[in-house]
Amino acid sequence: MFAGMFLLTGCDLDINENPNYPSSSDITPDLMFPAVINSVADCVGDQMFNYAGFFAQYFEQSPTANQYNDLAELKIDEGSDLFDRCYINLYSGALADIQDIMSRNINPSDAFVCTVMRAQAFQLVVDNLDYAPYTEALQASANSMPAWDEGKVVYEGVLDELDKAEAALGNDAITLTDPLLNKSLNQWKGYANALRLRMYMRLIDGGVNAGEYTNKAKALVAANNFFAGNVAWDVYTNASGQFSPWYGAYYRLGTINHCAAYPIVSYMLATDDPRIGVYLNKASKSDDYVGQMPGCKTLTGDWLGISSAYNTDYVSTLNYNAVPDAPIYLFTQSELQFLIAEVQYRFNNNAAAAKAAYEAAVEADFASRGVDGASAFLASNRVNFDAQADKLKLIYMQKWTAFFMRNHMEAWSEVRRTDVPALTNQKPADIFKDALIYNPGDMIEPGVNNIVGGGLAKRVPYPSRARTLNRNTPEVKYLSDKVFWDVK
Image 1 (cartoon, rainbow, N blue to C red):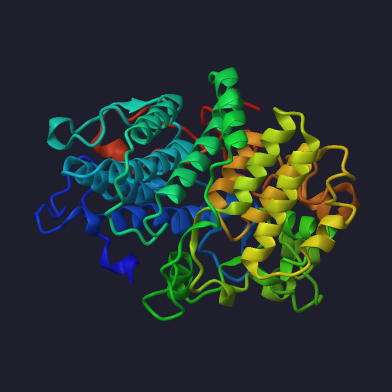
Image 2 (tube, one colour):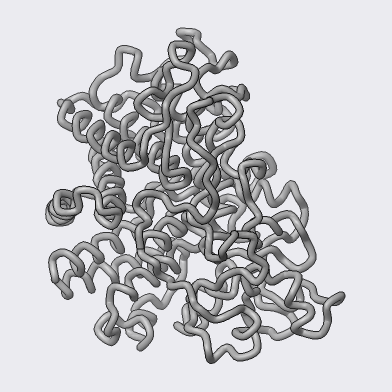
């Protein structure tokens, strides 16, 4: 499989110098490009999928295991190395490969698709860390301690790179091996436009040239030159050694570490969402879907009066059998349509167009999961566009639902950008006693919360490798420190 054949990154600790990186002329750009995609996809579909699943309050640590207690209780600092493997995969993997490919004699179309993946990689770094090595990065021994640039500088920089790379396009065909979009330049242009739209919305809400980027977002939506289907790294099978990364990591552990979090379960039940049964199992004690309160694994047994007997019979575990060969979704059609709906409603004041895009987003997500009943679901009172006074909140809530078991990194980013679902002021113990005081779907501060001052995770700490090897790494940041576009 491509995921195994083309993973060319080394295991060195310095992102600027990779002694294990193949430099032979036999390693041609067309063979290297799948490694670029794989390195980015592996981050999105494994490490980020896992920790952002907790931060977006889809996942909780199951009662009978302990692997992810720190994620559930937000006990994370630089020593946790939460982002270290992603940092290596993105810099020593994807970005180093792109740098190598673009140093060769390649045509403008090949340079453009590399630039798209470069923009995607840097977007992920910024959305996790805020600052990132960018203008001085990837210079190897010429600069082994690159400066870290502000997130907004990185965002605007890669957007400018995208514009220039697209302006340079001619009639050349893509020659790189491309298992992602099958060498379709139109699809790659559509993917680039979707990435632009995603980043424009964050720049707008971050207060960076908001008027300019609002106009650009409106122009993108008006032109409607986006990708068809999903942008998905679909190279996995239901066979040992070929599983999707997140499932493979779970499978190797051999334990049931994940159970459903209360917010996603409560919202899907409140909206009678038929998608709930695809990825969640009913709790055997109640024969119903039950989410665990965030950060409350050690407390729930006491609340139930069965402290020593609290186990997975009381909560919905994940249906892992649904994901062994699941693609990694870099950009879903559903996310794209939700972004279009937001632009139409917020900036164009066009409720009819927003409704059409909103419904297309929900329908696309139902279809991607093989679930029937999208039309009936959209007609129901809780999610019917016309029936909701706060239509923008509805768009955001259904986007959060559609990201579940699709792209948890983007879910966490959108929760931070929009503050939807909102953070309830109710305590987990009080909600447990009386669910009527809680608005289904709202974020819940963990019952055991290691963030000083409380709240939710707003970023991840800088990688310890960067701290050790690069004296220009910024001062220590904590989970409570926001990235540049999270200003609400």
